[in-house]
Image (cartoon, rainbow, N blue to C red; front, side, top):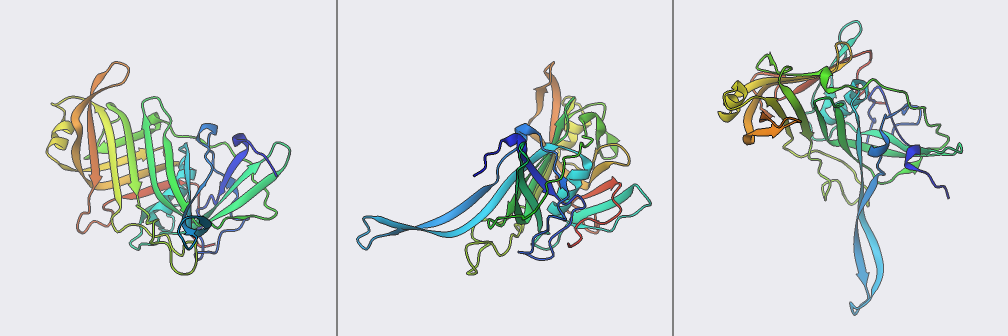
Length: 337
C-alpha cells in the first residue's frame, strides 16, 4: 500500500492534442509527455459513479448481494489558463481542428463537430512520491463534457472543464511521470472583448465564457456489452454563452443593445499575439443579466451585466462560434495516435 499527498498528484496529457484511434484503445505513456499545470488548491481525485442492484432473499427480508450494473468516471480539471494547454482541451471539446496555417507562429482553426461522438483521448492520473515512488493509471475514452473560461480585473484567467471517461482504469506499467514545466499564464490585462467591432478594454470588468456538450452519461453510454461504456456522445443541443460586466449605466449602448435583444458580433481574445486563443462569435443574441445593472468592484460602481448567446447564422460557416489558436505548434490537433 502507498500513501500520497495531493502535492504529489500529477495529471499528464498529450501536448499536441492527440486523440485515440478508437474507443477502448487508449493513448500510451509515450503520448502523455507533459503534466497539466494544476495548482495545489485545484487538485481533485477522479470519481467513479456506479449503479448497482440489490439482491434480496426469496422472502425479500434480507440483503444477500450487491450487483454492479454500470459505471462511468468523471474528473474535474481547473488551472490558470495557458493558451498552449487550454487549446488542447478546447479542441477536444469542440471536436474539429483544421491543419495549421502560417510559417510560425501557426494558426489553428477549431470548430464544432457535426457528429455526436467527439474525439476520445486519454489522460494519465498519478502520484510522484517524494520518496521516488510513482503510480499512474490510464484514464481512457475521455471526452470533455463542458468547459468554462473566466476572469476579472487584476486576476488570472481560469480554465475549468469536466472530463468523463471509461471507469475501467488500469495502471500504466513502467511509466515515468514527466516533470511539470512552468507555463506562461494569461491575466485579465492580456484579454479583450470586442462587441460589434468595438473593444471594451477601457470598461470591461469581468467575463465568463461557457461551453457545454451536455454529454449523455445516464443510460445512453451503455449496451449489453457489459458494465462499462461503449460510447460517450453529446446531447443533440449544445449550449454556449458569454457573460460579462462592463462599466456603464442605462444610457450605455451595451445596455440598449441587450435590452432590445440585439444581435452583435463578439470576439474574445485571450493572450498576446503569437500565443493566444480567440473566440469568434459572428452573431450573439444579447440580453440583460438580471436587472441589467449591478454594483460591482471596490467602489460598487454601476456595471452593465450582459448575457450573449451565440446564434446560427445562415450561410456563415463560422457560426455559431469558432476558436482560433495561434502558437508554436506546427502539427494539427486531434491527430489519431
